[in-house]
Length: 341
Ligand SMILES: *Cc1c(COP(=O)(O)O)cnc(C)c1O
Image (cartoon, rainbow, N blue to C red; front, side, top):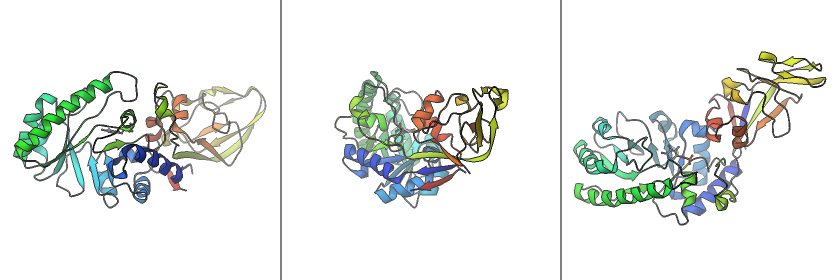
């Protein structure tokens, strides 16, 4: 069986770097959506708890329930619950959803500061507060999301300005409508590290904790921080054969042996998350050459080891697959065995 190993020391190293920047572990809300970026939801939440993380962010109710016993606070980004919960908070993504939340649900209002994907417009804040009050919901926070925190563009600055104005208005509205003091948060990994002095109430950190943050070379001070990838993927050999010079391997015969060699077939294919676009174009960290196309349940390499390391840094694999580490990681199927060491 292909297997995933999770390096706890690397994970804690990354959390140390993040906590140094937020100045306290309590402000870190670890983003655990999509099976903790493919690492394994319960595995990562368990390690996070051991480290002292108290907050998590997920996509769905189902994810939240699996880790509810491990964290004190969970924010669900994209689901309306059937009943209220003590630990779980839910996101309001637009005005029309407000009347669907059960009475007394703890909610966080997302404001659209310029990404135009989710959230109420700044001009709708007052209406949102009034509807939240009418629905009897407990409003705890106002938050937003950046569209280009990882790129050197002005958007990060004007989105911050827009959010700052929304915060001021929300503070006044919270008083007017009788809500308690609100929490404010806007930072994902890239945005957190663009704040020289981080002063928000919370940061929603995903990719940096997993050690695969890719930033443009302009962000040198951040790139110099020693984040380390947490996840490695290994595949097991199914069979080996000698291939003669000129013979071809796999579907379409796209790999041609340049000389007589041993080619082995390993149990990691696109069905388990090996992105097929990297067919004919990938070499492992230990220089094993991928031979031809990736199949559904397997892939061939020019080598004969019983087990090979497919990747130990998703951002390297991502380059071969012309994508980002997020996609490489979240493509990994949940039934691959995960081991923490
Ligand atoms: C996924 C997500 C994050 C985490 O982003 P990273 O770049 O992985 O740190 C933060 N906030 C929201 C709303 C998200 O959807």
